[in-house]
Every structure is written in structure tokens, then in C-alpha cells.
Image (cartoon, rainbow, N blue to C red):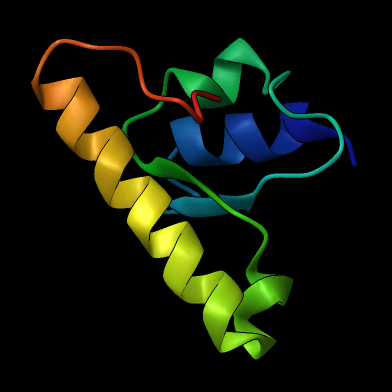
Length: 78
């Protein structure tokens, strides 16, 4: 996927915001997208079919938020 047109469309307000399903290219998200406040990187949503996995991912996300606000590096930084 060519990410430059997506970044340009968001910067030009042709697209209001974007949610990015992190893929095999992670953590190599282009700076043009990473720097936008209206782009949200998301974990793979395909795991939503397995409840235990979703619970585990939620716990990891919460732990990383706590780490961030305590000044520590998150374990799942992208």
C-alpha cells in the first residue's frame, strides 16, 4: 500500500482521520503518518474473534498506558 497519498489526503483534510491496522511493516510507519494527530495505529483487529486474545491485548495496552504516564517506555511501542 502506498502510504504517501493517504498522508497527503489527511493533511489536506480530504480525510478527517485514519485508523491504521499495524501490519508486517511495523514499526516502520512513515513519519508523514506518525506525526499526524488524527492517525491512530491499532493492533491487528483480526484477533477480535478470540476473546482470550482480546482480553490479553487490552491488558497489554492498559499496562503500556500506565507505563507511559509513569515515564517508562511501553513494552509494545510502535
